[in-house]
Amino acid sequence: MGEKNKRTGQNDYMADAFAEPQVPDGLFWKCEKCGEIIYSEDIVANYHICPNCQSYFRVPPRARISMVADKGSFTEWDTGLPVSDPLRFPGYLEKLERMREITGVDEAVVTGFVRIDGMPAAMGVMASSFMMGSMGEIVGEKLTRMIERATRERLPVVIFCCSGGARMQEGIVSLMQMAKTAGALKRHSDAGLYYLSVLTDPTTGGVVASFAMLGDTILAEPGALIGFAGPRVIEQTIGQKLPDGFQRAEFLLEHGFVDKIVRRDRLRKTLSFLIEANGGVKPQEMYTTRQHNSGAAQKAVEID
Amino acid sequence: MEDLTAWERVKRARGGERPTSIDYISGIFDRFMELHGDRACRDDGAIVGGIAQIDGIMVTVIGEQKGRTMKQNLKRNFGMPNPEGYRKALRLMKQAEKFGRPIVCFVDTPGAFCGMEAEERGQGEAIARNLYEMSALKVPVLSILIGEGGSGGALALAVANEVWMLENATYSILSPEGFASILWKDGKRADEAAEVMKITAGDLKNLCMVERVFAENIEREESEISLTDEETEAAAQLEEYKSDTEQENTEQERSSVLTRDNMQLLADELRAGILEFLRIYHGKTPTQIVEERYQRFRKF
Image 1: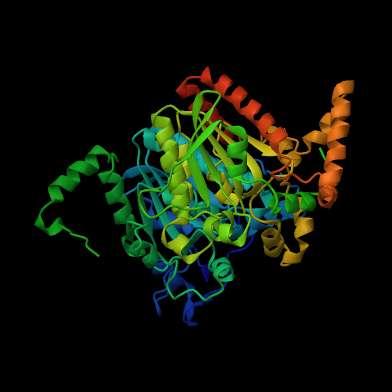
Image 2 (image 1 turned 90 degrees about the vertical axis):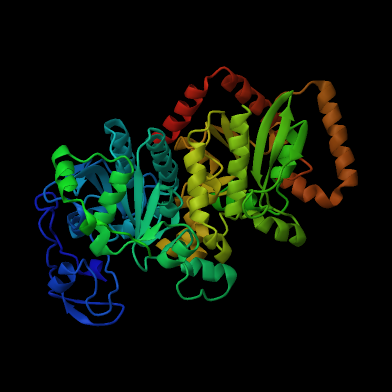
């Protein structure tokens, strides 16, 4: 998948956060689902979707932001927070340093202010390439600061979830991030503000059991793996193979745990519609333009 | 406190003879009425909950419940709750909030159950919802880790104003076996993992994760305190009586493993602690109680 072909050694995330997603070092990627070798620009131009089999590549934060944000609207918050190593786990600090170099982000989540079709929001995007998007103290802290700031500034919150769960290397401190983020979201909600959670492949473990499942609206990307326990753990527990499609986005939709599965080409419009519908405020000039344009041709009914 | 390795404490925490939530409930409270069901799916035997009375004060009590026999464990699912268990717990907690009852939780689970039906019914959502709602409960919440504190399944009953631990209880991100298998690709190094993970009461107290730790081997520690002659004599007689009647158990007595039979002193101490907790929190406003709980977790 995409994240294996990361650009290496670049630390210029902020500088060109709004440039089009960059072509990675390898000019060709192999789709792990269909095995097709594809020119990487074709994938990037196609929302990180395999043009051959339509399966979804994982999207690095930078590319995700440019997929939904108005050009130039993203301002990153809370970078460079001091690293915590509560277990003094051998090799952990070195591993973090290496991950920063490889991924170009400072932790497994990027947070900041964004406009989506003019709608202002606080947005967090998790990075699967950074230790499988695992949540330790810094991930929890960045998200909590973002949510608290959104509560103060009366902004809706959007989080793109993508995580293997709590970060083992920080032990119990990682577990506490679940309660910390959930508590911050409760306050945000009690202030009458909107939280939109987007579940992408994979969203599991402690992230599912905290902020991922707490959205006023929960969207999921097609085929994303979403679950509390990983499939292998369940198979070991029950001693049998899991059926096809178990814990995929479509399965969660069927069981009532996500509101809607959203295709990437419709992501931006879906987000801005939901934010506007749930208390978002659009700048005045955009509002008037939209009124002029509204008419029969604009009518859209989405049933799927 | 006894001098044990982390792995020895893990084994104590999992011990089949260790008192369960129900044992503490009957050992600590004057009355208890169990209430059942999540109002959506079914009643989960891995969580017991209800209303208890302690020194005239009504509280809501919720505990994760393990069984002793195989039959009990089938009913209790080895103390591993399904989503409906967490939803039952939340229902009872919201009711406690409505009627102004403080909440006491007993945590003792290897973890939330990892089964197909648990996933279908939203195990992650159920835990998340508990964390979310518990963070804003207007009544005081006290959680006591009495055995295994397995990951999110434990945290779902531990978003509390204070978290207490028994000496040989554990609280961890996942089992030492799981930790060793994920990070070192070798589940057999669980004993080593237990040391690294900082999961014992002492370690967690140092990390400010728990407010109080209760010694389990109270009898021995108390006998070290100077006794009056009368007490010493009575104790000697009791020992004599015990050695006559419970020869088979002497080994266990000596190794001071906590069981249902020797837990009453600990239960009394917990009772005194709970009463003190209730007294302190009785003087706080709902806003204070919520804010203090929020800040307790905000600092992590």
